[in-house]
Length: 281
Image (cartoon, rainbow, N blue to C red; front, top):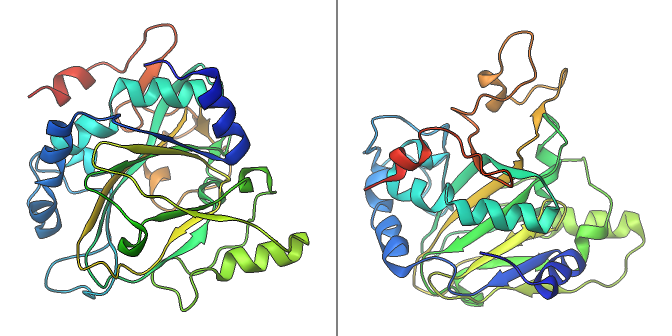
């Protein structure tokens, strides 16, 4: 796909961009059908994901359920996350030579699930050089305001990066970090946009764009797959350690192994070996 100059300009100005009918509905339906087995711990590939923050029978039912790097555990998730058109769009939006997967999120917000605190994704990227991402948030079903949809602060990609970390899952006030930051920046007014999209639609957002989500009061689940991407030129920071993903760092090297952080698109035509075979049906 090729994004228009108007779409790229909108992304750079507002900090996010909605693209309708991005994913084929059959691919969306297939990924959505895997959620029950994933959160039961039934992994198609036999590999556990890197993070598995909600487990059936032991975790709080009121929390938003999340798995990180579900692409390693399930090929239906991988077909969305590792899609070449996701990589191309991210490279166009960020003016990168190519796109590498940083991590994914498989997110399930059942009825009554509580809030996710407002944050900037780049706050958590100290272990990467350059420490910046762009995210493709993929709706697997119709998502509305009352369903605890993702919310963006328009133009907040132009704000400085907030390095202080606040409560993320089910905070008492999911706007706490946002209000703290705006107060310290002297910003008295800002606009929050709740995103309403249908299955197959996606939203790209900048790593500095403030976002979070409210309570799901809709009576329906909200399921999404999220692809967090970085430049194909990204490397490990030589000193800063990521508590989970630095486990894949080679001793004495800052190079990122494409087995764990595959390049899903590059302008010169390169795509990490094995991706097409791995995601094939």
